[in-house]
Image (cartoon, rainbow over all chains, first blue to last red; front, side, top):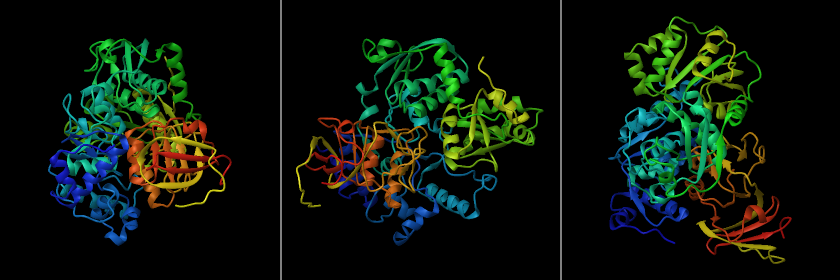
Length: 430
Length: 147
């Protein structure tokens, strides 16, 4: 089957808008055909990691110039030849990156790695791409509207866009987002289509889910139960807020690959259970009760043995300004224990607000660090000698111990702050 | 790749082309979905996800037969990177179409198929010899290895 092209898309493919757009369109056509898509949708809201690469990837393309242009052409656009990449005219942003722009040495990065990072960032900016450097673009200047067709990477952002905002995006990859920045097209497949967005399984929530900690555990259960399908949650869920959806979605995306969920009476495409399913409930019927809640807590804490915590990481997904306000309040007047470290991650936009609001000063006074751009999992950076970490994020608990070969604990934000200040893990499920 | 076969295939499966071309090689099969970023070491083409049944095994130069992709949106970039390190699979057969697996196959540029008339994950075992003719929509399987 071949994908149907408009006259404008044919012209882009044939080079009317220059070689880079032609290469982008060629890749998008191959991608659409791989999916079995019939046509494309227009998008002017793209979030990816365009052109950024470690030095060894540039070295791999040494014969092609070994620079940003070579990587963007050969890797991002999967082109056999190097092309000039024009300035991007649409709404395109760069998601998280590899290190903090100022505290990179503390993260264990070399001067060479930092120079490469800084050079990539200049190229990103020179190409008209916004340097948001965050996994939470929706907290840093890119908030889609309901029904808007987007091309986003970052699983936690994708699930937020689809579920909480009602924007429409598949879980795109690096190459498709970079190509979409040039061609402003993405295959009309999956979450761009109405029918695809309907619920597939029901989850009945019996225990009260109200705090961010409870929302996170329910998210981890949800992904485990429905894998990569679309759940409809109904029942005892309350106190909905942006940060709770952020943690729920990130957890569900990491334990199972959920890219969209419905919560009856809460999310925009689920005024009722029936509306979320587009008819009567179908699929399996799961229950989240006391036993399931305890099992999730046990599972998340199965990679923790020693209670001597030497690293606490907060900010997965990147913390919002209200989370930083809460942490500053918890830290005010306290000090990070000499055997422990506290690193908190957020976007540059939110950090600027945290500085203006006095939160960064409190965090620094306590001996903790507020970092941007990245996280421990993305940059594989933890304080030297870290053996036992603690998190308030189910997603980070899922990834970091596996990536770094360390132990990990999952608990509330307050338990994490206490662990940072005492170097002892005393979390428990109430 | 014109190879003269000594005997006909034991199993033939039909499906839809994801990426065209013809290839053949030894199968590496799992009935578990695969994470790219955080689940695969692209330097070795090795599955590293904790609790994955293929943990510690490499798909380099093999035909990877699996249900589909899961996890991070970095899936395609991680598989793409295996092409740079020389650890890419020769071909891919997957049963669940996702944007991650489709884009990963496209940028790997290895013959790949999906939407089968019978499930390759059930029909093929690790070590079987598999020929993918993606343009013809046909998978040939020789049990137990190279015929």
